[in-house]
Image 1 (cartoon, rainbow over the protein chains, first blue to last red):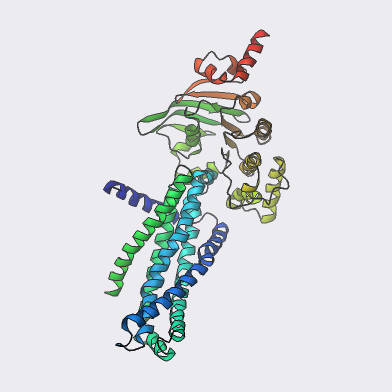
Image 2 (image 1 turned 60 degrees about the vertical axis):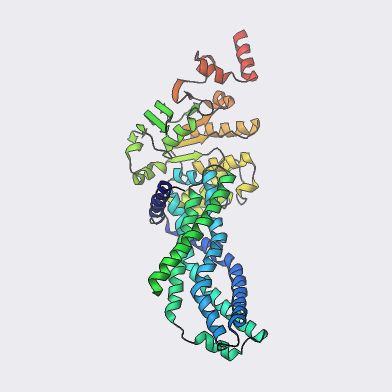
Length: 248
Length: 253
């Protein structure tokens, strides 16, 4: 993508967002759509989030024990698992994984609606299609992503405790002390702030790519891929910017 | 009534419509016909506001649609029903939910009243019993009828049908044609049909506009179309053996 192309997309993205954030035309329809999206984005993602968090928490505990075991205090394992899960794995890696699941789903759903004239049908009826389709997804993601991330933190730290006990890496008392030592509540706030930003990025970038699909099935697939790639890249850039702003 | 005045539309260097002047009358089935790429779909998209015109104006009952803001256009859009080529049904909704949708969005009707009106429309297009099926579970002809039910559920003043018979067998096509004609009379709609199906044109066309290379090359009624004297239209009308045979028989008589 050339410089002009990038500028064009940035301009069109912000115009798209301005349309997406317009007041819903019918409150009840909007509320129903948001509930459906909460289920699609949140409840249907619980399984993958839980599974990945459990394994990651356990693996981080084993790796920490393997790397530093013997020459640093045993509570370091709990401390490292907690910090990794709260600061990076749950708020960044989980949204990146969700961009693959939720983002591609949003792009392909809206893209299919575009190429099958369903969006034209909405417009002809007088429905503001962008707001109608995108705003419930944005709101649902903003509400549900932080919950998923908190669940990931808790499960990851819990899995670390379990593996420490099962593989005799450290005592439970050491692990418990580790997850409490030097705890800063702001770290959780920082994690939740960036989760909300990532939720907005993933949902809006994916919806943007889906909405501007033209052609057929091949283009829908391409939009879906673009949605994931651009979401992940923008999330990574935003991660650096937010971290620099909030932690230094 | 819809009046299109001096409409131009181009995509980059390619001019698709040039100086289009047409009028579509209320209570009549108005056809826009022409070969693929002649500008039929672009003209329709301009009329319903899915595309902006480069020049000219479009008037709905005297009101200049092209000069209205998007908010003001919503008022007119509520009076438009449209049957899209592929049906454009919302695939996550049942047949009944599809038909109810415009009422849910734009009226204060309660659930029972909405359902009653939607069922009335489904009955009108002979689709009782299919209301809880999803679009993917019904045939192409049924999808077109659901789309037609959705288009008329709000009692529109203007009805647009884009290639209503594409992909349908001749018998189902006749059912759709008859529905379009009957609904036009029942609701006194200004109906605009975009088609290249000569059977439909001959069956139900009241006013016919022939588009060729982005301009209106001929206009008239279904009697006149068979003997227009316009070379491009004759080539279009008599492209099939069937139509050539009909012409030969008419000449023999």
